[in-house]
Image (cartoon, rainbow, N blue to C red; front, side, top):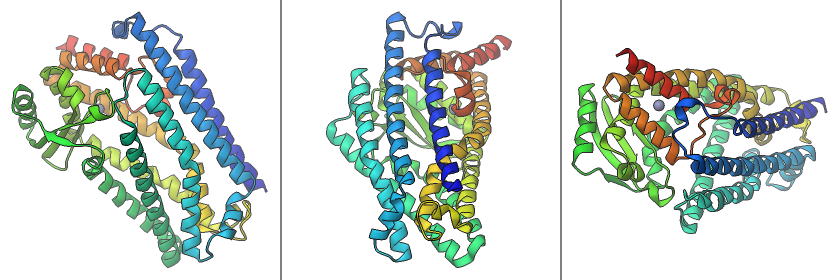
Length: 408
Ligand SMILES: [Zn+2]
């Protein structure tokens, strides 16, 4: 009983912390903005931003509340053990079906709130370009990818632990490292399931981008324009590829509305991430987050009391895996904070690289426009930045870039 109590209290504490963060953000929105970002939104736009983030936060918090209540009740009333009793009894089938059932129970809630966010909130503020059909096919693809990924990891866990006992966890860690590397390497191919990619036509932008990459010894294999405007009016761009061969993808919204100078400034920043091997370090940091996951699986596999606390007669692979999933978010908070601090340091260095390449002013101008077009939070609460933000705030970045340009 004690184990059950501790797990439920931990989950409740995590949820209350989420509520607390939402309250902090709500209070932060009432404060005046830092001086160097006041020119980004005029009064009317700032009101729009404030209303947009209030609504987005409300949807997010409501969804978390509903998901939390559901999970809490399922665990409190040992529903998983009852469900496991009805499902086919083989070890493999029972574990896999229990995990799939646990995921599917939450799917309607996730889809409903994604719908509210995309089709009501984003729609209301003019971001949404997604049709009902695109939205539904996206959701179905996401659920299938999620199910395949989660059940594959579950199968590896069962297989390795059955074969090798405790040593199996080292193999599991290695397998997860390979999976995450494959996903990041082939993220473009994955994204092609959702979007169309066209090559960027010849012209000023193309030659500038090529010149920038060649100057630092990289070759651009492909420059793609992605049809993001089918779903959103927001803008983004990214750079992928191993070694010296790079691929660039630009949202069509970016190509249509930003100057070649601004776009090249953004890519000078992205190139710096490769140049300083930030991307590789990020992959390593992501792998570190698997350690608490492995530790949770290990402890709960060895101590059957964890599953017994929720109505099972002994250790049950599916239940261990489900509990791990629910505990991960809380366990990850202290693991993520130092990773985020490192990532913010990388962002400053990448901005500095753009300044050194002569794109300081264009970068500031691009960052301001990106923030404005994405209705970004100009003044997030410092605690939330410390714990969760991979990027410094816009105000911090502009201050750093301005300081570097003043030095020159
Ligand atoms: Zn960056």
